[in-house]
Length: 436
Image 1 (tube, helix red, strand yellow):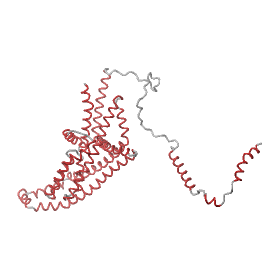
Image 2 (tube, one colour):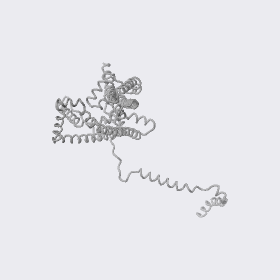
Image 3 (cartoon, one colour):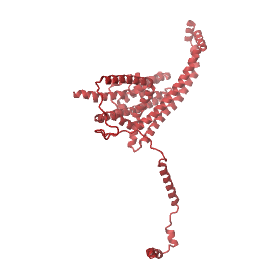
Image 4 (cartoon, helix red, strand yellow):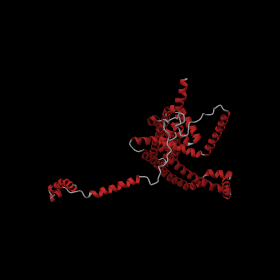
């Protein structure tokens, strides 16, 4: 029975195979089987399997623990039956003497602790503020790249790399120029000193007051004084430590900027969660307005500084002002300081241009200060139209106050800080006063 069934089932297939004609040499030539693609397919399968194995976790490996945010609307336990730790008990009355005394003592202790930490970590706080300022300045660039379908990680890497390359190019151009010009000054200094000694003015003064003998005595005392020589050595060591601390600080700021850029959305989200839930939309709107205006201000001020330095370099190169490259970098740095930076840069370059002749200094002063007027009325309003808007008197006062407190960094962040304070006063205090 089984043999009959097998033969009957196999019969049609064998018949079809027997009826089908044998493929001739012409058919073999017309439809060859692709044998060369089989090794490629096999290699692709091997690569795919290797990629799957690499993506699989190692045996015994655990996923990395991440600090995640709780849900937006967390369920509230009613009687404590569903809560894993039970429901909280009643709070102590805020009018209780023990509560008031304890909390007052804790408040004073926390204030003293915050003051002690702030006074001992001033440098770290400055690094953090600088990194946040750079982060808010680069965040609009990263978001612009995200809108162009560039991943945020790649946008952060491109932005920070461009900033690092610009800073490296700045120092790579500045340091050799400074070394060359200092070398020239050192080589020319003995000649200048000898010419001054041989001049009639010095001879007349020396004959009256004995300056040459006095200088020789002071030099002998200085050389024979070990404390003075130790002070020179200490100054050299101090300069080296200052340079090392500057490089270390630049590295710390770069690393913090990377972390802040990567975690900026999460940082904002956490900050918004600290506000009451009913106020979060308003807090988020105000915070986004402030951070967006700060970012636009940083980018706009950088563009204004680059244009300012480029124009100054072109003018200095045409009229023959010495040290044009070095002075252009000085102009770019000072142009970052709003309102007064361009004026200070113009006066400094004009003084240096006097060494090439009063005609050269006059031409540069006319061209540069005319450009500052053009910049104030045509360039800055178009670049800063999406940035902050601060009254002139408030801007000047804030820049002076920021420079007095934090130096150049304080002057840079003074106007965005003033704009943020004005916005908060307008939207919170004045709105509350108007509603009364």
